Length: 537
Image (tube, rainbow, N blue to C red; front, top):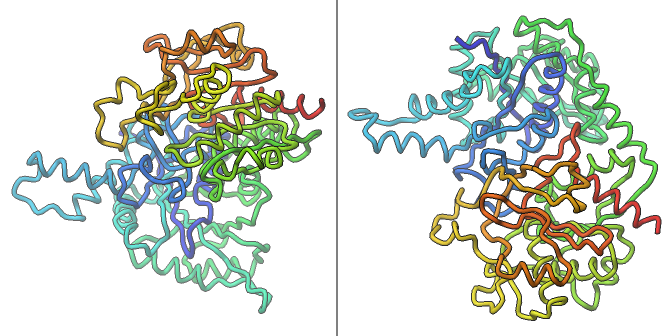
């Protein structure tokens, strides 16, 4: 029998309070105390996964090693814990209902009426416990998406109620993250919204064991006492979460507040070993005290919602700290770039990153940005679609193939230097059918990429349908663009470089997904280093 302990993190009053960051910070502290910890996210939406969602709807779609398209919070979990997540770490209502309906169609419930209770809740409980029953983890933290009171969250809250009863109070607890708003006119922090949120949770049969209170101002002892009294928790179980300078400050703030100690006492687990955050704090110190600065233009088409590129901006923070450099991002909408304004829009940047994306909107601007970078010797980093745009730009302007393009945007183009992958040609369903997850790549030893990785064999995460068309490889290489990374099994080109350029690298994969605080991604580190060198020229 598994001795895994379960922590459930719910949210109240408003969304976007940072349940994922609190969950990741708690997990980090418990991990540093010697416990094996993982975090999972339960998302109430009916999509099977966020793979078909527009980034404007849900921010970026994060991808795991085993090919799951998941919520961006899983990126936070990995960046904080430095351990990979998997399919089991993200559950949606769509997955739950699909599993139950599949069982019903097979006749597994023959003769029974299929209902939310017990069938849906049983499936939710099964998913919650998959990670715990593996025996790999001492503690599983489960973040429940949405806000208490949302109709779509009710089956999840009911499942938590049942699990709390089944597991007992020494094996399962609830942390409720809530907001203590400050009314400037009255000059007061107000507890009433939290009281109502806890009341709503208790009406569902769940009493929180710990309150974590988001606030702009320090919470007094009197307010903690009042919250404890009206929310039925102990005063020491009311934790302040004051607004932080960066998300990476939160583990230290939670350590000061004793959140990890409170949780371990509930579980009757040893609290003797103190969290060791030495490497973490070295990263923070470098991040907050840079000795230099670079400006990177991020060329994308979803820049109005910067969460669309969350992993990239976090990878910049990791790589910046590694180089003791502040990375300033200049957000440039690819649709806004024209031959007439590109000089103005990109003037003075030290590096250019052309971001991933889908569809034909803003493509011309991305191609122009690649050209500007190539012709002006500005360090260039192309990711997924960004790499494909680099190939198209080179084919048009160096090879002279003026009609070179991708069949994603121009199905009948005469020179499809980027083409639909062979394995994708019979695919009709859009969801979960791309080339996903970790794939191996062999890196040429005489390349900038090898210099960054210090390894010939790498594994990186993918999310694409289109690929470099190998029919054009020979003529492209003759003109000076080299394929420096190949998947040995499929022959697919994974990395392109221009050796004559100071730093020009395009990758078909998504390196940003594997960048963490403790292991900044080597390509991002090298890109920032090259941009820093450019800034000093």
